[in-house]
Structures are given as C-alpha cells and as structure tokens.
Image 1 (cartoon, rainbow, N blue to C red):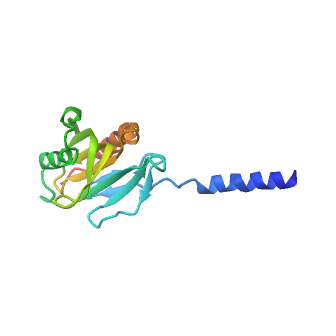
Image 2: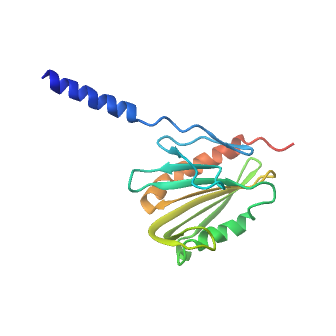
Image 3: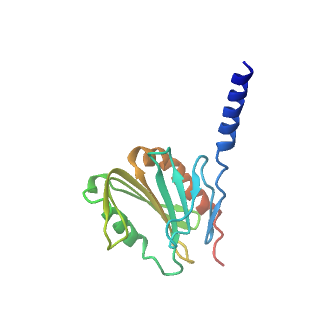
Length: 178
C-alpha cells in the first residue's frame, strides 16, 4: 500500500512539474502580444523571426511566427496576403480576408486551408495536405508586424479565435507614434 501511495505521489509530482509556465508577453515594435494560455514559446527557427510559438497537442502542433523587418520593409499587406495565399495553391474557394481597424491600427486577417507548400519563397517546398493558415498583418509606421499561424486544419481552426484576440488586444494597447 505504501509503495502504491509513493508511486501515485511521484506521478502527480511529475504531472505538476511538467506543466509549462505561461509564455511571457511578446514585444515587437509598438505592440505587446499576450500569449494565450497553453500556447508555448519556441526558439525561432530562423533569424528573420522575432518570436515563435507552438499551439496544440503533440502530433498536431501549429506554428505561430512573428516578423517585423523595419520601416518600409517586408512588403505591403496586399503583397504578403498574395504570397501567403500562394503557399496554399488551389485554395481560392477557402480564402477569407478581413480588414479591421482597432484604434489607430489597421489589421488584415487572412485565413485559408488546403495543401500548404512549406518552405522559403523561391526555394524547394514540401506539400503538407490538411493544413490551414490564420495570419495577421498589423500596419505601423515603424514597420508592419506579420504574424502567421500554420498547422493542421483542426488545430488552426480551434486556435483562430485566440489568435485574433491576441492580435486585436495588442493593437488596442499599441502606443501611437508621436
């Protein structure tokens, strides 16, 4: 009995200590993003990425990436929307673009799903069927901020509301440029 109790205590201690700490807020330019509960910070896989998160269960994780290239860099919102959609060839019927104004910030949200052509633009790609995109572009005088969540359709769709809330809340708290 004592051994069983000890094993149960060790198991519970492992469960409690394995719970991830909440990811710290992400500060990019004028914006501070509060990371949704259960989303995990990840080491950016490229020096171009300002931050990176993982969303969802093992085996069905989505990736959230943040970019800012500086004033006048990284292309327009329309250029990026077109490039992101081009990464999902044949998904025209699934594409949704929403333009919203939150305070002084214009946000373009984009969503689609289908086969994701993963890889760097102009380089080799890996087709990933059953994937989805939820992206946002926050326009700012110090340089637009580009946020892109890609992963399995079920994970991305289940995380879309939290993604949009994170982005909209960051826009509300952005300090206007003097």
